[in-house]
Image (cartoon, rainbow, N blue to C red):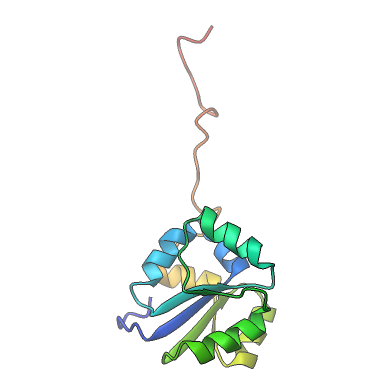
Length: 138
């Protein structure tokens, strides 16, 4: 995504941004190629984030826990000392949070386009029963 191959970056996804991806596991595995740390932040309860990341096999380096997004971004920035801290979100509120916490904000659609990630709903899943034409069916 950054073209330079730099790995001295911490990347945080807001949970809604992660949910908007077609395959969050693929995205995290890709991001690990050019970042040092990748994680999830959210205002949702811990079990919501944990259930989502387990279901999608996302291995995160950090997550919000019981804290809100702003506190989490501040804590992550103190804990993970990298040259860049990039927050991927979907709303103006996410942009404002990034500014307040001195993270770079990257809208999900721009990140997905730059990294060639598929957004949910962009890929057409075929319904195997929709066009079923079996000759042996009575």
